[in-house]
Amino acid sequence: MATGSHRNDDTPSVVDAVTRTVHIDGADIAYRDIGSGAQLPLVALMHLGGNLDAWDPEVIDALAQERRVIVLGYRGVGRSTGRVRDSFDDMARDTVAAMRALGLDRVDLFGLSMGGMVAQAVVEQEPALVDHLVMSGAGPRGGDGLTRMTGVMLRGIARSVLIARPATSVLFFPGTAGGRRAAAAYQRRLKRRRADRDSAVLPGVMRAQLRAVARWGAQTGTVEAQASTPTLAFHGDDDILVPVANAEQLRQGFSAIDVVTFPDAGHGVVSQHRAAVTPRIQSFLRS
Image (tube, rainbow, N blue to C red; front, top):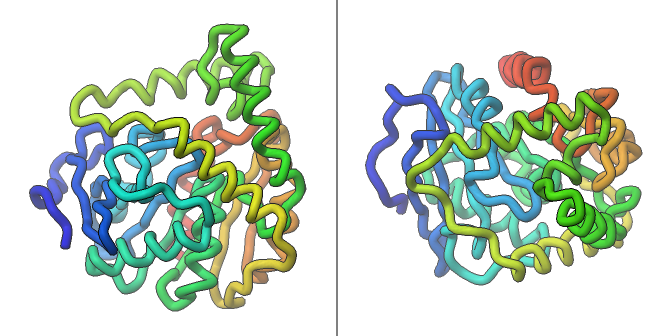
């Protein structure tokens, strides 16, 4: 069962949302819960190496204007207990269990990067649970370049140290003037939450999640999603972590998919172009 105080719909901001936990299979999974409305709740799954504080508040708050939004953690990451998973199928099983424990029997699902890959596995395992699916910077099983992500990430981290910029600025945003401005603004937004912050992500989490990406990328075949699962996918055309070819490759597994790519955008396309992306997601989820 979930622990913590009741959701406060009078404060619809993820910056102020209380961190709660829900118990599943020997682990307490951290989550934050904001917003309300008659529409289905939206469950949001984070990118590789991110904890609950890694969500861009201007993205989550915009989506919570019309509906309940639950940002859900992963086993062993941040304040969530248990041993971190190193396969997306296992992460998906945890996600399904957490949603069931929260009393959710039908949801919309939103996954960033790795979160989008976990979301695909959720749709495989429990297709009746997901009404609409939104992904950004995600790839299918066997997607282009996914087995090389570890090397790309390590080189990006090394470069970030040399130029004294956050690794996510280097890895998520293009090196253009517009990309650098977007990265700086993104980092400022992530610092808005000052109290009740999530625990730091440990190096072992990164290693396990990178193994999960490599395993996913080494597989063949596509996700067997139902044609009735409406899907919306975003991608930046300068994504160095998940090359933009993955956006089109997703069509092989999702017949009811709309793919939207943005120029001069990287892996952080949702944050960089949030003014265009969040209304598009809201419209899609209402459809």
